Amino acid sequence: MADQNPRIIVEKNPSQARLDELNIKSWPKWGCSPGKYHLKYEAEEICYIVKGKVKVYPKQSSSSSSPLDAEVEWCVEFGAGDIVTFPKGLSCTWDVSLSVDKHYIFLHHSSS
Image (tube, rainbow, N blue to C red; front, side):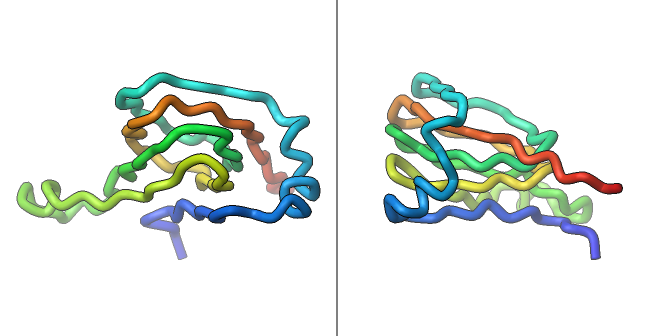
């Protein structure tokens, strides 16, 4: 079954043991100022939000929606202390209300 609406997974307030298990402090860092950013994920990404607040609006993949349906948007909210997983193939808009600092890693799954 094709994944028509890839899911963003938010893990709120993970334990220190979970952070240590993922070895988050060894991951690269990235940050951005408040604003809107259009992103497409070419690989699955896991990130740990060190600071900031974000609403992510996934792009709808339904081709049969009417213009009125396009006005109804859903979003995923997360912020400091959360672990967030973005699926490969996701297109979305980040609406950053508080400057973001995050650790991140891209997962490249082998298909062989």
